[in-house]
Image (cartoon, rainbow, N blue to C red):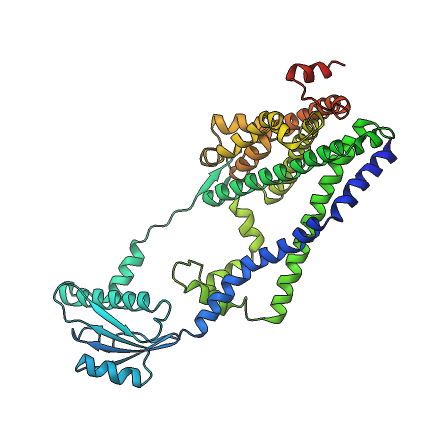
Amino acid sequence: MKNKTLLIISREYLTRIQKKSFIIITILMPILLVAMIVLPIMLVSLSEQRQFSRILVVDESEIFINNFEDNKHYEFSYRSGDIEQIKKEAFDQDFDVVLQILGSTQGVKSNIYYKKNLPTGLQSEVEDQMDDIFFNQLLRDSLHIEPARFENMQNLAKAESTTIQIDEQGGEKEHDAEINQIFGMVCGLVIYFIIIIFASQVLRGVLEEKSNRIVEVLISSVRPTQLLLGKIVGIALVGLTQLVIWIALSGAILGGIQLAAPNLFSEESVETIAETPGVNLPDTATLQEQSGNIFEMIQNYFAVSFGTIILCFIFFFVVGYLIYSTLYAATGSVVDNESDSQQYTMPITIPLILAIVFVPNISMNPDGALAFWLSMIPLTSPIAMMVRLPSGVPAWELLLSMGLALGFLVFSIWFAAKIYRIGILNYGNKPSWKTIFKWLRE
């Protein structure tokens, strides 16, 4: 029996990894993932290379003269006189922009003149500097406060808070509650998509063999339960192989890019991206300080150990896949085509969909009654428990959830095997639910 099961696993595995679709997706996915990481950095870097601009300031208010700060992207010069004459001369002298600050009595107004293309980020840079300069002027003239003193007062008035969780033993641990919620949601969504994708592959595989009558040949030499087990394990190994190749190829591509363009991921590149409007990153000093103790940082983010999260993710992924793949295989055995299978897969899929729908609720209230019961029901626990886990779950709840999932897996295998051994040779009609439950007693 063991040798025949291994032959089925080998057949499922080799047949699928030799398909063109498997090869194309396996190669394209790492390229797309790396592109999502590298392209934004490259685009920002390329845009910053042509960003240096010379700006000629014509200040009619006389507040901003010699107060703009030059940087590696912008250089400010100053002129006074007729704006029309200045514009003609400025663009002939290779100035990129003429900034006219109007002498308005109602706030600060300005015009930005340019000939070709307005440099990216220039308008926001000018407006930010003008806001600071004008505000500092108001501090001096109206409140008689020096800007440096006002900045010190602002820094002293800033409030900071730290989230500290107290465990059942009274111990205290500092961690980030928001990261717990986000990480848990991501884990739940990943498990959902993996289960749906690979369980659907099992369903299509069973339907393909049944429609092609290949199953009749296979059943003559192996038992239905062996065929069912071999198909499920074989497809799981295909998914694992694809995942390992994705990780290896992504790492190799990133390594090659790093060798070809060593400055792409440098500190200067990080600073360039951080200076891009709409992007918020820690300063370089903070990154350097934190990078020396990265594992302690990761550990402090979560209410439980990061190793526990990884092990539980593997457990619930494997058990969740096995539960749904066995049920999907049983579904595939009782119908002749994929469209007919929807009638039987819907009751199985609804709990999984409900778990996804309630992910935000579970994340915001991981200790609530809804989160607890969804993490105990085997059909929803792979998602619900992983959403809760980073925020902290009592050990007895985690062990109970695992035990119930394993118990339901045993029941699923028994249930699927009973239906599969009869349904796989049933052609031409869709059995009713009454007929299916009758098969369980035979």
